[in-house]
Length: 214
Image (tube, rainbow, N blue to C red; front, top):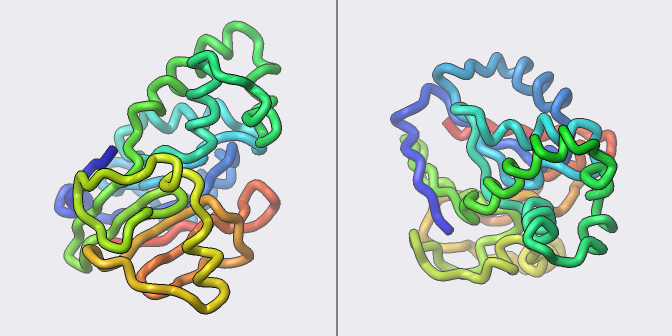
């Protein structure tokens, strides 16, 4: 459920918002920050695929040494379908591309989706600037602690904290310097106390947000 990254192992570390199949947009964004795959690291807040045009390429990022990700709700929907679950929810949320694949491409992407099941819900990154916690939708507790049991459903889907913050009701999450989430498409990144939301709806024609934390 948790994974730790030490900033001392990398020159620079970036965190990117929901990619949703926008592989070309991601590559363009990495070029704009002169990302170097040998020494830099990119961490994703999850939702690699669905809705966008390059879904297989985005799942193939899981094979890259310079890439890490937390599991998003869209990965979870795909995992559930491959495990025999109902397809309706995934279809309704951009998963149709998978069912249109020919057998060769399906055999390519299925192991990657199954690999996504092993993605952590939470990544802790320690840098000289402080401790960063990455999760897809929320860290569903008022205080962070490594390996603390949390609700998987809330980490993948919860919007209650963000909705409250947008009404002026935000509280600091203790235990880390900053928390970075995706999941909810916004016009621009929003910071409430020590919680930063960076899904800016790249798949809907907006900018793909990438931030440098080291």
